[in-house]
Image 1: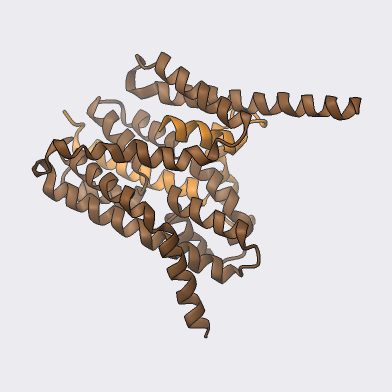
Image 2 (image 1 turned 120 degrees about the vertical axis):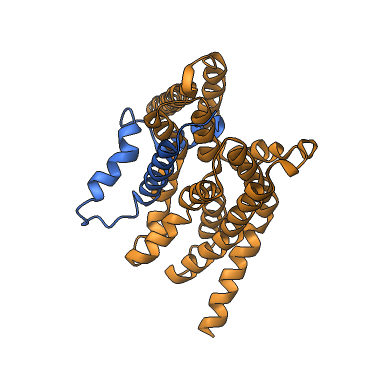
Length: 242
Length: 64
């Protein structure tokens, strides 16, 4: 019975995350093609895909490598893109905090936007899930995303130029991030962060080594935090008057 | 024109290890000796105590 239940949670996770395959497949394919065109060999492309599993950061690193940016700048900028995962890690502590060290290591490795977004929604809607059920569900989500990311990156690297540019695979990148980001823009501070990041990024597009990304992200964080503080102050004032 | 192969491997390993550290940063057991060091990775990017990770996520996802 336990095995059947485990399988059930695994397949639930797999099914809930499976719509993302439609996005991950062209995204991975595109990464393989771009990496090959940028001069990475098959082993380098696959090592980056397997070690990092973070499309946006991988594309950022490739763009900076092509710009001949210093290695330090490449790593720091790409890591800045991945900093959102620190929030995912913090958000998963109440759910995975008591899991064994090995299971937490594995959960960390498979912590990508899609697995986090789908799993956390499930945990919020079903708070009675046990630790094992949560972990099994999470790994089910990962099984629907990560293998496809590896396989399609490999295909992209192998096929390379033979994929016609008319297929416009690059559509997958904005679609993927709109699907992940849009539901998060729930409050005024979030909207303010998004607005500031867009405006500053456009204004500073001239900066070398894609440094506009870090500057705009930091300013957007500050704008969001400041907006949140102002809202809290206003709320306290209103409560004081009442 | 791509950087030399040595630089590529430095980027792959640096990005791979750094990303894993960010992912694992809050899931490290509190008593583990390197937990405070690992937590410094995201914390060092947080300019002030009022900047929450929600803002980082929102801003960077939008940029990406």
